[in-house]
Amino acid sequence: MRLKKIMTDFFLLMALTTNISFIFGPNPYELVITVITNLTATILKLGEGKILATEMTAASLVADLHLVPAAFLYFLGDTSEAVSLAIGALAANIISILLSIIEAVFSYLAEE
Amino acid sequence: MRLRRLETIRRKLLRKKRQKTLKEVYQERFIESLKELRIPLLLIHASMSFGTLGYMFLSGGNFIDSLYMTVITIGTIGFGEIAKGTDTPIGRIFTTFLAVAGIGMFTTAITVVVRIFLVGDIIKMLRVIRMLSDIEKLKDHVIICGYNRISAWLVDALRKRKIDFVIIDSKEESLKYVQLHNIKYFIAEEPYKKTTLLSAGIMKARYLVANMEDEAKNIAVIVTARLLRPDKEGLFIYSNAPTEGTAQKFEELGANKVIVSDKLIANRIFSYMIHETSGYVSDLFDRIAYGEEADLEIVELYVSDKSQLVGKRLKEIDLRRLYNVTVIGIRKPDGSLDLTVSGETQIEAGDVLLLLGKPSSIKKAMGFYREVLI
Image 1 (cartoon, rainbow over the protein chains, first blue to last red):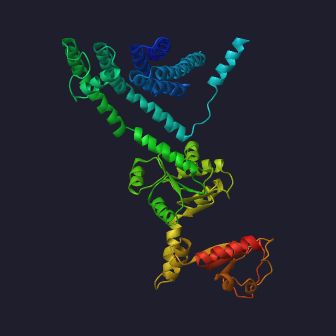
Image 2: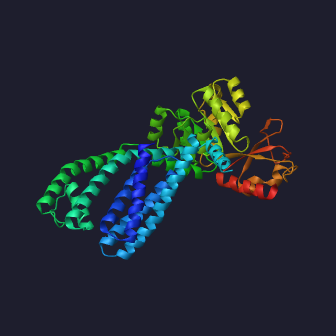
Image 3: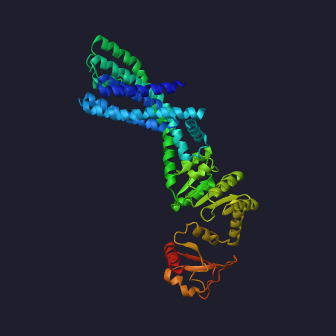
């Protein structure tokens, strides 16, 4: 068990779950927490050189680029646009999680 | 069934990977070096997130004001208590706490990030990656392995002729001179490695100069280059050797021409002795061949057995009148040189005509020869 992997996966999942809960019930705190966890996950993935790491970093950056404008739009009053951007970020977050699972399986097979 | 599939995937994963190009290696190193940014970025992110969330709770969820308040606090700007709830005792306690913890974290992290970019290898690596991408676009260029005085003279001549070249050398000392001489394409790796030569664009290069100080290294470069480009007419390899025996060995290993520098110097001194007045004649052909005599050029014109020139007399093709180009000699197939040519001299198959004239006239004459006479 690797501590770093737990940390990264925790922030990835946290970003995904808060993202979903924001879409179903828009709330300022949830959105900000989504942005914070997503940015943390991206920073933790910086410089990762493993299998699928580039794809994961790219997916995470895409989610950031959806969520940061979503936060500003939401607090400027455009809730519907913020929600639709958050849905876009959700797609990227789901891909991130899937890639993380594939990477885990790959590294398990390679180590065996 | 499923287990077998998993086993196949596992084998594929463990299979030996293909050799990476130098560009890929540097790109990986660049990505790896981004790791250094993790801690400072996390520090900035943590202080910003903590401040923003705290002010949001105080102001009842106003994100923009909270973010602004955090930035002006930890960025030591301190415009005042802008966000709602910050002028209350709880708000002030929070601001004090944020300022004490956040300012240190923020400024330290910013300093580290700037330092990584300015002092670290990140910018340098980006430059190398860009340069390697540019090298990939080169064609018919020259690869010079080893940077020393000979290479520096060669670079000078190539620059005059506007021919692209790539230098490969791994020595620290050479690196210093490369920067000093403002070399555009330089690879700081061992030149005898396959990856290095491939990254220098050997597959599209026209010439390679093995000019290392060490004889063994020159051999390694010549052999590796010839393995990658076996065609001696496709890639011309030149080198220098201390003795005739070594030169012969180099040529047998794949070099097109190897110069024995001591012999060359001795011959030159001897030629000055023969033309003792000014040495003008001794230098003339060199100056023409090296392009230093701007108004004159000398080229070789090979006459194949299919050429229409075969059987013709020099006065019949009349190159002097048509193109202002003079045939100054003919090298016969047996290697002898005939310098007593006249209008009556007949051209034979396998002859090499030595043409002397202005570069523009030579170009026209050669164009005519290639298009019409072959």
